[in-house]
Image (tube, rainbow, N blue to C red; front, top):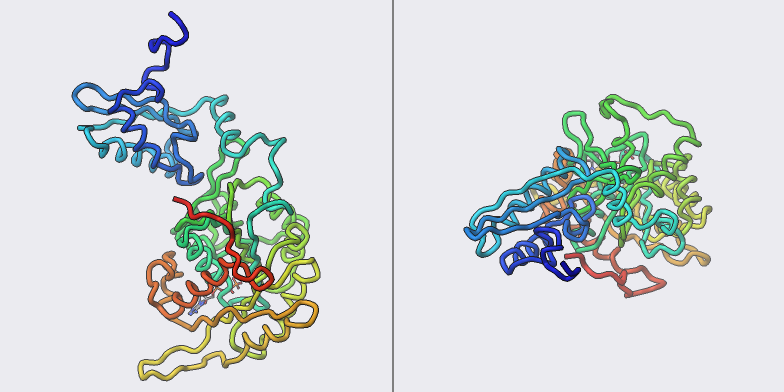
Length: 399
Ligand SMILES: Nc1ncnc2c1ncn2[C@@H]1O[C@H](COP(=O)(O)OP(=O)(O)OP(=O)(O)O)[C@@H](O)[C@H]1O
């Protein structure tokens, strides 16, 4: 046989496909790995496609691990894609687990050769990094960070979110990745850590690394060096792929994490969340000044928990008013320019309830006044601020 002899080729391989098989391959091009967000065909996960004369499609796939939720989802989406291809009467999918060699090749295909890999989010990275900070706890920083991340992803941006609030990690709950005391954990393929994806956002949280411990009753009481190492590992070993935006939910205040992240990500931009309470302004300003000391740039202030609309049309300013404006003006000076108040998110019981239910209001209740304001702030953020006025992020929406 000559090398060109078709009988030499792998049975079911794409190069050898009949028209019906080619149609199934094309349908499988649209099935994406739910964590890597790239087509399973491109990732080498489809072994073979065969269509018998009676229109039955037989698809063989190779997964890194079997039985995990992502694996079940890939299997069912492959089945659905093959079964609904025009001209296909029925479909079955056979699944096998990759060998260690195949897994190694897979991880290299995903992130490139370790030695040649650039540092994720380093100075040359095109990813915009936005750290969200606040002076006090409980001002809604995590809720806003999660809402902004989901809203940016809904605009078609590739978004990652690191929950660096080690003492009060609440992002998995808000994004529906935590149920009955169990937090969805990242998938590990050898030394590749793949973050779970929620509402289009790749999410990593300290709450995902507690093993069997219930996050509701587990306290992370680590000292500075341990926290620093964890943040370093999040930035280095968790594979986010090419992102347009990485959001970081910082713990409130000016502690070890804020300083570590300032050192690890000196080019990050900082968003300050505060309440309308003027008395809270000092502490919010201080959290922004720590970020500035490490070279980060404060791009704006968001006021949260502003006036609650009453049924009679009046507005109840539960936490006073003017706090956001005050923080923005205190952070504006000749050296740093004007720090804008990017928005004022009202109190909304529905916004809180949807966060508690793990279903962010920006998706489940986009007409809610708080959700609407978060969506508006996200659209302001997706255009570079003042110094590069009007310039878009330079990215194209993902399909
Ligand atoms: N605009 C809003 N209207 C009503 N409730 C809100 C609003 N924003 C946040 N909340 C609620 O306030 C509580 C605190 O919010 P969140 O956990 O986001 O605060 P935080 O600043 O991240 O707190 P910490 O940093 O201490 O973890 C949550 O129950 C959240 O649902």
